[in-house]
Image 1 (cartoon, rainbow, N blue to C red):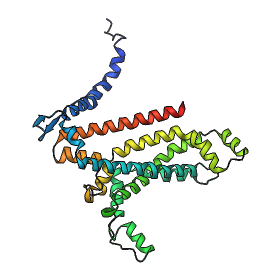
Image 2 (image 1 turned 90 degrees about the vertical axis):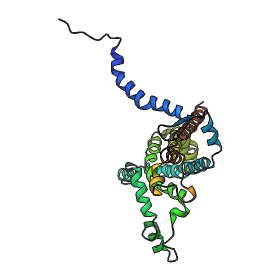
Image 3 (image 1 turned 120 degrees about the vertical axis):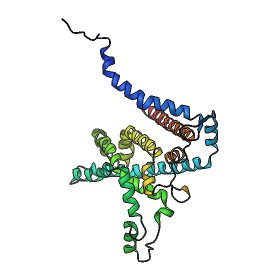
Image 4 (image 1 turned 120 degrees about the horizontal axis):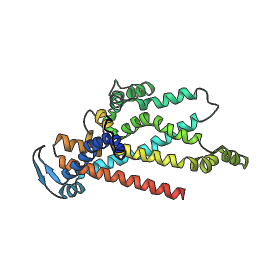
Length: 294
């Protein structure tokens, strides 16, 4: 007696069924619920009131939200204009064929990205401590007039966050730039050198156009990651937003609104606005990339 067999038409659905089940359970359904919540005002998990676009209207006039946006944009600018040039500089250094120990240096520079954000936040919070912190102790040893009681996290929250992110992510982005540099057309470089182009001219007119697609991808990753910043300032500032909310980010404000004040509706509205910002950033990057390749 033959055992019942599955019709070939249904075989693909059997294989994709686990993914569909997980996707709808942990992605599609929560997204739909958050969209519904964005149009409601919540007073705890069981008390809700439909307010239409009230949450979004309030968000447009919420000074704390715009303060968080400014902080996030400042951090994003630091990631693009400080972190990425450092990553590119490291990649150019390690791309030199005559450099000894290139493999070891690559591992050293990449290794910070292997540790977690919580660990990095704790480490830099200790480094920026008064008197006992490594930064103050080192500066006091170099400059006798330096005040070891100087509180970095009370005066320079955003620069401290940018320094921590450079240490954490520069090596990670270096790998992308290094892969792009290794794929630069060597014949073009040799031809430019024969024509008398100097090192800077070769870099500007040959290397930069060749690595531009990868650079655009890295910029997009940095923008998305920067706008999702939460763990690093939360741990670095001891579960707070710093003096005068100088370390408050959009995701931190979302967390405080949703889980500390229990206004899940307004938090959902913040989340959807953040998602819209990221979609716009991705579309702008895609349009710029198409213009460059056309």
